[in-house]
Length: 84
Length: 491
Image 1 (cartoon, helix red, strand yellow):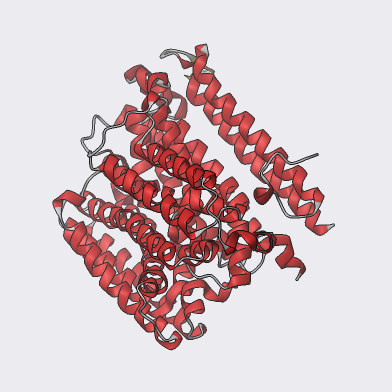
Image 2 (tube, chains in turn orange, red):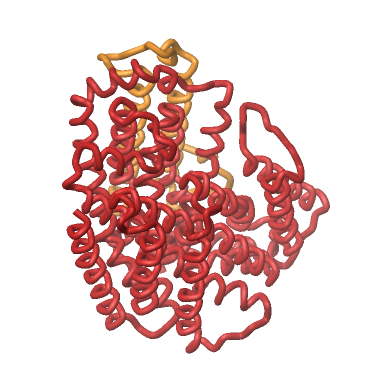
């Protein structure tokens, strides 16, 4: 997998490093786009609720927990690489 | 109640002073040890000092208040930049660490001056760092003063709270340097995280539970649960300047130099990410619960004190202690970094040579002078504005370093002319916009830091077109190789 980052921002020389770095950035980008995209949906109306909670707060909470989970998963990949 | 607050604060201060004295006995008498703990900080210590330094009174008081007044628009911005900040550290922080290790950098100005081979770049970077830190440090003192006054119904005044914080912080920072700061950060970080979680239970309990709290908040303020697309640029500006702010704010930049290894640095970011997520959700729950149980506040920074005052008055001493901890954990780092920037960058760029043996002593003197000046500023009525607004000014100034850092890490077109023109154009643009000398309105409400960044980008492209190069560009390959953290680990 070729990194889309400019040369100087590419991860360290080992090729294995490029995959987690690029994957992390793509996934973060997708979650960010999804959280922003929610603002264009019916969730972004004053009375919209999900399970009794305001819809935008509900969805954003889901997005942010996903962000956190991705961070841990991404670093777990890197640690596995180091151990190997 | 006030007796309890005074007793708890006294015990806490005594503990901080003991840690400072202990740190003094451990460290070596070099500037590198005083400012960077000999670049030997473990992942656990680094993770917690990142956490305690990044989350200040701003996080403890300001952001909960912002959830309360701006609702989901703020939640979107805060959640995104808090959780993207580790990515900024992952991409830039590791490279800053690697370069710092190889080239013995102490300050942000060391890296940029070396990259652009220019003493004037060092001076400009130093001045940007100092000006970025002044408003940011100021808000910590202001926040603590406000809580003291609100929690004790004015018995301990704003002024007394500010002075007490300044004296205590200066004492352990002066004697123990960054080791004292890291040790106290661990205690302070865990303390204010614990009290924030307690505040969630207090607020949600008062609102009749999370579900009932959300329902009541939505019924009372439906407009706060809708993202305002017409002004989407405002939260996006917050995200754009605060995400790289995790690396660019000088006291956090300097922390990148402290890790003992690349692995320690990365693990510290995991610790930071986990704690961030907990604090994000906690402050959101406090803010939303507050919408239904606290009627309109003129100063949103006083939301948490108001909740404790009405629903858990017995816990008020803990709140004062946590605010103290949150503020001090940031003030100490900012003081020490300002001191290192003034001795290492500003004075050096002005041609004032300081003997290495005297750097530590001079650093201590500057810490004392700075805290005295900041205390004076904090006591002025003009400084007592909303916490987040003041801190954002500092972050906007630090944002001027983003493009110069990107160019330096790329290692291309790093001439002194490029560095100076990019920095000067950014300073001029931001100053003109902030002072109202020039009026520019970007679409969707994007803020002045973005306009200043665009000006810097245009100037950089112009210097590229003029093909202004220097010896530094010729050596760019070597510089870039050294910016690879793996290379350090291998050696």
